[in-house]
Each structure stands twice: as structure tokens, then as C-alpha cells.
Amino acid sequence: MLPASFQLPAAIILVLGGLLSCFAGYRVFRVVLGIYGFILGALIASSAMGTDHTMWMLLAALGGGIVGALLLIAAYFVGVALIGAGIGALAAHVVWAAFGREPGLIPVIILSVLGALGALALQRYVIIVATAFGGAQTAIVGGAALMGSRAAAEAASRSVYRVYPLDPLPNTRGDLLALIVLGLLGVAVQLGITAKGKKK
Image (cartoon, rainbow, N blue to C red):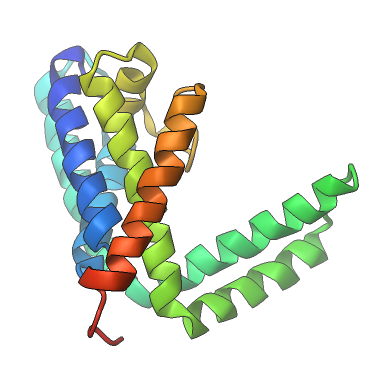
């Protein structure tokens, strides 16, 4: 977890990285993977250090960030498959939740494998949608932190144990609406402009 003095720079990084991901995520997917890998690695490494030792915490965050960035860049295709597997697991939970039950292990595994295979087959579109909405969410959290939202400021500097895909969004309809609008705008821009002509 970052000290309070680093919350503003963290929020700025979240806004800029989120907007890059949202509007040009497919074009610069490896850069986006590097940014998110750096953020995740820094969160993991800094959570192991106490906030009393700022220099050691910063060095751990920097080292963890570099390792995380390199790992995610190297895991490009694995990352796409993991996105699909996550979507498959989510689908299993949504379907079973509609019946008031939890899915068993076998349906989750089957839908995760199908999701991973589907993501690899539809790689371009999976990357565009995932980067657009992931970037929108990241930019909104950073923007809310810059505007003084206490919950968003905590999300911008939180420990790794509380980093969930949609958890940091403040609980207001405006934030959810902004996520949907910005995400859809990001998808449209990527499909129409930034991803045009780039083939994987």
C-alpha cells in the first residue's frame, strides 16, 4: 500500500494508463500489458513491505513492478487465454446464480476451457473489449481519486489483497454509467480507428 504522499502520482498514472488502454489498448497491447503488469507487480511487492520504511517500500514496488511488467509482456498469449478463461468462469457463476446455486468444479473448468479457446479464436475482439473496459475502469478510479473521492484514493493506493476487477469503482450510478459510456466509446474508437489495419 502506498503512503499518502504517493496517492496523487498513483492516481495520475491510473488515469493516463487507463485512457491509453481504453482508446488504444489493441494497438499497444504489449505496452498495456506492461503497464498493468507493473502496477500489479508493484502492488504485490509493496504490500510485503511496511509503510514505515518508505525507501524500501518504493524499491520493492519498483522491482516488483519491473518483474510484473516483464512477466505479463512475456505471457502475451497466455494473458489472452486467461481473459477468456475468466470470462468462462464468470459465465458459469452467472448462469448458476440465476438458479440460486453455485456451479460445481466441472462446469467451471469446462466453461473456462471453452472461454480460453474462444478468446484465442477471437483474440482481436477480446483484447479490444477487455482493454477498453479495463482501461475505462482504471481511468475512472484515477479520475475520482484526483477529484477527491476518498474511496477512489484508497483504491488508487490499496494493497494487493483488495485489487478486484471492478471493486474500486465507487458505489454510485454515475460511476457505473461513466464506466459503460467510456468503455463503449473505447471499443468504438479501437474498432474504428486505432485497431484498424493491425492484424495479429
